[in-house]
Image 1 (cartoon, rainbow, N blue to C red):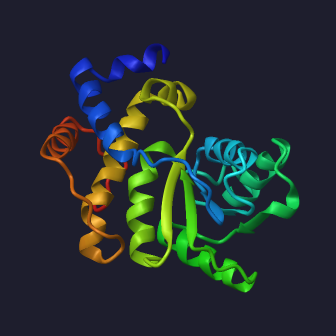
Image 2 (cartoon, one colour; image 1 turned 30 degrees about the vertical axis):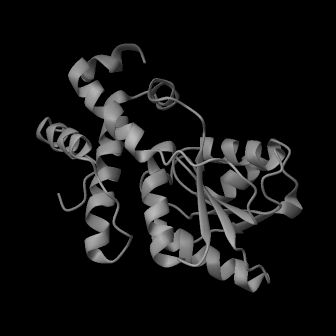
Image 3 (cartoon, rainbow, N blue to C red; image 1 turned 90 degrees about the vertical axis):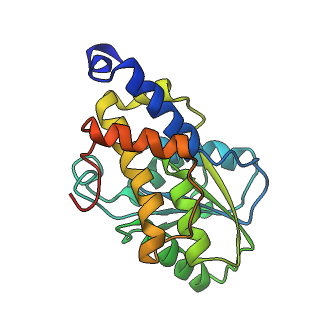
Length: 222
């Protein structure tokens, strides 16, 4: 983590760990009909998807995502396109991959992918959502709202918080992102974007403390 780790105090790190643990759904990996790799800045999603494919957990894989202000420079051809190329390099066959290149948010990831699968004649009963680790709970809540008839299994690259920060290289940014995703878990059900999730008091307290401490760059409505 180098010098940047010093931006976050030990107490703030303890609070962040509580939020990190909450975001992880802890689902058992089991075979599904299709997997969906949710586009983002994190190429580890494609790495995780390739590994799960090679374990034989699904026969088909959709990468979904266009661009956002935070990914355009890194993935100029779009998140899903770059994720596909990475997975191909890791040995996933081209015939197993579908690409949805237009989604601009998680709701669109789900609805656009669902339409793509229907157009391909696929009607999955069990779906695996592969995301950044701290996005598992939000992606689950979104899918349960928009695609309630399918069984959802959440997966991500198997990294602890410290290893994830090392992969990103900026602990302040990671805390901001975890806080921002928790705000969405709390607020999006009120807007009809997701199903409600129980948020334990200690997790809510950690969130409020980190917001007071200024970890707010990824909050909505600010």
